[in-house]
Length: 111
Picture 1 (cartoon, one colour):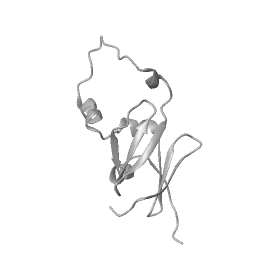
Picture 2 (cartoon, rainbow, N blue to C red):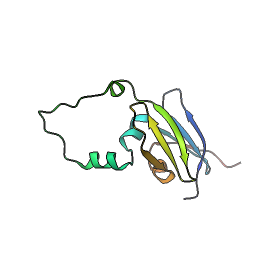
Picture 3 (tube, rainbow, N blue to C red):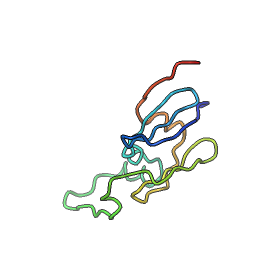
Picture 4 (cartoon, helix red, strand yellow):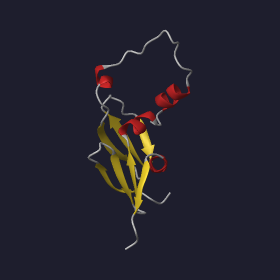
C-alpha cells in the first residue's frame, strides 16, 4: 500500500477523520474502531462462543461512559496504536485495515 494518512482529526459529530495521501477521506465511528480492534485478545473474544444466557457481564466504570479516543500514536510507517476511553490500548491498526474500515467521505479532485 502506498497511501498514508496526511491529516487526523475529530469531527464535530465525534467521528475520527483521516485524510489520505491519495486524497481519499474516510470517517470512523469510535465504536467501529473499538469493535474491530485487531489485537489478539479482541480477535479471540470475537471468535469465542457467546457466554451462557444466565451470565450477565460486569462493566467497569469506564465501560459505562461514552466511548472516546484517548490517543493515537504512530507505529513505524505502517500503523497507529489507538487507545480508547474504556482503557483498551493494545490494538495496532495498520493503514490497510484503516482503509477497509470507516465510511468513504470524498475523493478530492486533482489540483
